[in-house]
Image 1: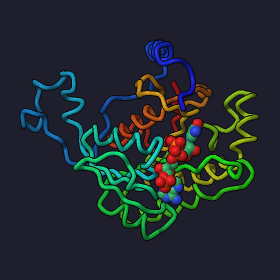
Image 2: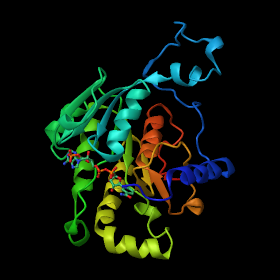
Image 3: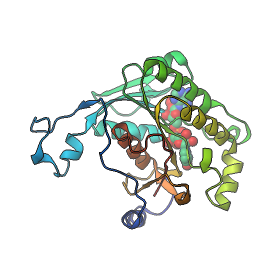
Length: 277
Ligand SMILES: NC(=O)c1ccc[n+]([C@@H]2O[C@H](COP(=O)([O-])OP(=O)(O)OC[C@H]3O[C@@H](n4cnc5c(N)ncnc54)[C@H](OP(=O)(O)O)[C@@H]3O)[C@@H](O)[C@H]2O)c1
């Protein structure tokens, strides 16, 4: 489902937001210090001055590559993250109960069908990976509104335990605008609708965030605003200052773009950016 404006006006609007924004939070690639295998430039040199600054040169070819576990990979943000991670040259292990139905085939993609609540499955999934992204979701339906859930907290407890045991440090975890200290910051209408429709889900996302924050992991908690199935625009902002937080829309493809950028960029380490256009 596409929310928001029509594609042309939406993109014009987004470009305007992007170019006029003073709060862009990307830092470039200045803080890696990672242990991943460094990809060489196409000329074969370890570092090549000639390729620096070329379109698709230093940014793409000199990047580090990693093995990434994407949890919740069969749909939505997770599926977009699979595509973006492969495009960036990473190896991907894609975990979801319906992982076999992921409509992508790629030599660097391993599809792993399994339940994120099962410790044995998750322990297997974190074996020999460098980074984990988690973007689990529950199906929309009356029970989401009416019944409390513990799905997010349970799955995250399992994941943190498995990662700490396997000494996999880097976790990029999607919760949502309204979780933790971002609750109640979306304006009156959003807050009322949020409370009625998503209050129970976000009660559990609060617990999920507390589990991540109190772990020993190198985490980033990513809080997108309302999701759309629109295209990747790159015209989004990652806002860490609560004074900037506001509700809006962002495409799943843009959220995925941000997740994949966090694989080898530590600018948002131990931060809880709100993602919006
Ligand atoms: N909708 C919004 O506007 C909005 C805004 C902000 C944040 N968010 C949050 O963003 C996240 C992603 O949402 P989305 O709509 O992009 O994704 P989604 O369509 O809800 O996809 C959820 C993924 O989780 C997997 N999953 C669910 N239960 C699982 C289990 N027990 N074991 C393994 N995998 C499981 C699903 O695969 P299988 O079913 O194949 O297992 C699927 O790949 C959610 O946490 C959502 O709350 C949503």
